Image (spheres, rainbow, N blue to C red):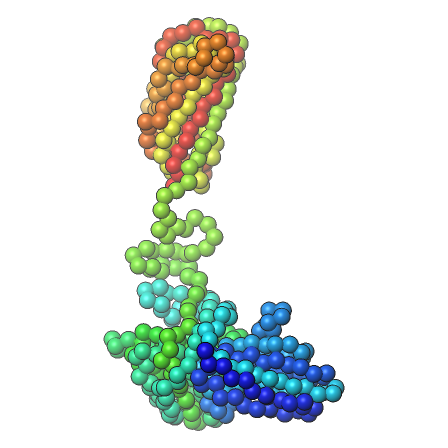
Length: 441
C-alpha cells in the first residue's frame, strides 16, 4: 500500500498557506496538528491548480466533521479526484504550530451524506428520484484521462470520452455569467443530467452559476459533456480529469409522490405506511373470543344458536387483519369448553360485518340480508376430552381449512355465530373458547 508523509507547517507562528501536496495518486489524506497555539487550519483542495475550495475532514477522536481545525488532533478526509491539497494556516497567537500530512491510496472507509434539492430530472436506470443523494468515497487514483476547453456561447460544450471511467473531477473558472450543467450519454444519443457533487461535501445540485470544483459520477457512460445551458456573457474555462478506477459514488434518494416505475412495479409514494414492494410471505394472526351460555340446562335442538347469557350476542374476532380492510386466510380453528362431557359437533358462521344476533337456544337463521358480509363457515368435529377423570375441558380442532376473508373498509374484525349441529342437554353457565389463526396479507 502506497503511503507518504509530508510536513505542511513546521513550528509556524504566522499566517501561511503551507506546503501544497500533489494527491493524484492517493485517495485519503490525514493531517496531524500539534503545538501550543490559537489559530485556524483550513483544509483545502483544488482540481484546476488555481481555485482552492474548503474540504470537510473528520476529527478521528470525536467523529465531528468540519472544514477547519482549531485544536490539536488528527483529521482525515477523502481526496479522490483532487489534484492538490493544503492546510492553510490563519495565525492568532501562541508559541507555534506543526502540521504533518500523510497520503495513502487505501480504500476510504468514510461515508458522507449529501443533500440534493428536490428535482424531477434525474434518472437511475428506470427509477425517477428526488430529494437526497449519498456519496461513498472510494479509491480514486490513476487520473489518466484529461480534457479542457472554454464555454463562450449558448450550448457550447467541452466533452470527455469516459468509457471505463468511474469518477471525473470538474473545475470551472473564469469570468462568466450563465448556467452550466454536466450531462452523460450511454451511446443512444440521449443526454442525462449528472449531479454536481461539491468537494466541500455540503451538497449537490444539477447546475451551477458560479466557478468551483465538483465530482461527477460517470460509471457506465460513454461520453461526458459540460454544457452552457444558459449564456449571458464571458468565458468559462473548464478542466476535466477522469479516473479509471471504479467509481465509489452511489445515489440514494427518496422517490417523490407520483407514478414511478421500479421495473414493472407502479407506486404512488414510498413513505412509512403500507406500501410493499416484493414482500414474500406474511405474518400470522391468532385471535380469540370467550363467552358463557345461560345458567340453565335447557336442551338444544340441532341447528340452534349457542350464545351468551341473557341476550343475543355475536362472537367477535378483533384485529384478525393487519390493517383496515385487510385480508388473509384462516388456516386453523379451535373450540374448547369447560364441560368435559361435551361430545357434540358445532359450526361457526363468519361475517365481516356484525349480523343480526340470535339468542341462545334459538334456531340459527340463514339470512339473505347477510349475503354481502358473509365469509363462510367452519365445522368442528365432535368434541372430546383426554383423561376422563382429571381433564377439565373438551375440545375440537380443525386444521384442514383455508377460508379466505377480507375485512370491511374501516375494520380489522370478523364476527361469528356458533351453531350446534347436534341436540344435547348443556351444563349450566358452560364456558366456551373460540380461537382462529390466519395468514394475513
